[in-house]
Length: 219
Ligand code: DX5
Ligand code: ZN
Figure 1 (cartoon, protein in one colour):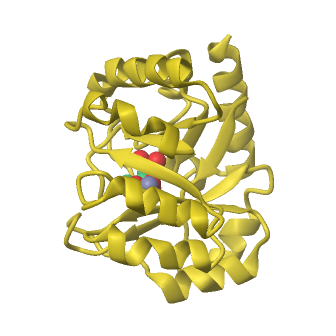
Figure 2 (cartoon, protein in one colour):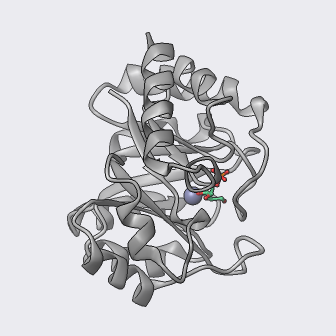
């Protein structure tokens, strides 16, 4: 099972409707929320998210790169996000937060920056529906994929296999036709791709190509 989740960060923010319609084969749309504190960039918040929600029935995968997700994340679940990802570096009480997200009907997801190890959070995995391993430092699209994250992806895959259940493993950052195969081979099932998709002449054809490469490499 492979899921492709184009990141709207690389789309035209003045025409998100067109961007949404340009990737009909996407499994979900990835929505990056940045607060200019947790990361040195600012994107969009709840009002814009609500407009995106109203514009499409497709699964929305919200990635919160914000401080104090304990306070702000549940509102995205209430606004209809199927999946809400918080950064564990920013969460005061990740277990409580994950339970609040699930309680509001969303998948609960935890993200790790490149320098954050997975091992201290191994016991939390049953509380989660997805783990996001960042493969760039969060904050900007179009950065180079960090190969140093691959061993952590493999270790996370092994931990998730041990836990069982249906916890998705996602990567975000620098995912392209050049890097998607090594992620799939390391055990990733959910792929965020921003610049490679929305920078392509035909975004939906790139989604199909990434899916083809990932499926082949997943073996
Ligand atoms: C970056 C964001 C990503 C971003 C990825 O911090 O979380 O979702 O859109 O962009 P690319 O795919 O261009 O690296
Ligand atoms: Zn993201």
